[in-house]
Length: 394
Figure 1 (cartoon, rainbow, N blue to C red):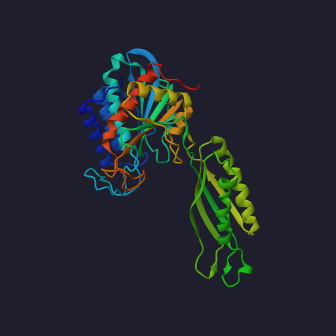
Figure 2: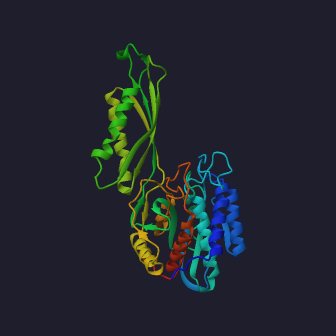
Figure 3: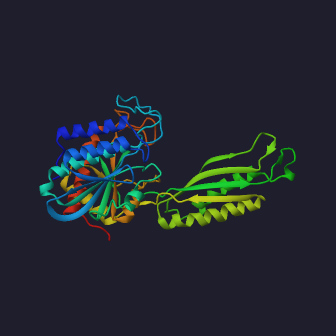
């Protein structure tokens, strides 16, 4: 059985979470957070090294032979002004842990306490991946490039993410796609300016841009299998000078998202075809720029299913759900492409505590009663993985 963390450890995890919450840091600026992680690992006697500037890689080497598994937690915050009113609210103006990364880091440190304490009975090794910059520009890729998975060589990896859709202490393990890709779209529509009283002498960029926005929705509505998930969103649009001047240029930006890598790969050609032809129909020119972002997170099916079975068998009081995928993005995708991976969600919802707001909200908060369940889940993955109790599709 996967035992409950002792009360003193639960209190330490809560303390760590609140300390990190008070001092949020943006991507690749997590200097205080990384130092706190290193201090905690030093106190536990866990070897560690830096990766990707502010990332920390710790290694717990078990005394018994076994496999090597990775546990990942992101550390960065968001450029949001906190409005929770919590006594441990952010002390840094304009920055807030509005997505639970403070809890992720604290729970992984809690799991490190448990695993290091049973090192003489531990099989294989557990690699602790404290990652910077998940909210951007992305810390997973540089960590992997700098060998975070190589010494020792990680064979499978897991992450835990808080989720206000579930009650505190429930978890979700979903096989297959769980997060979408996130690519950036930038459009510049160019026409010919003129006087608003004489539209026939100009090429108005505004109606051309408007038609492009509407036509792009055809990708989701008519060009993608209804059983597949795709999002085409135009999030900004700007153009024009004043009420009686025909605009010569309109700029737009948006996001392209999909769960299926094949669908994602086909979006760029569809965007070019639709945008270029609509612009031409209005006599305008258009510049298109697509920036590839995070790929979709695809949980290894066998790994997810075997982990769910293991948790149910060894911690039967934990409710294990299978939530639907979201269209949000997560750069754990790179770890899950490098080795079989599983993204686990941890419920933190509590109506009584006001923990009902979605991530990236200035009012986001979580029920800390979920934290020991997160620690147990990470420990369960580490023990099952190192002992060879988990299966992978590879």
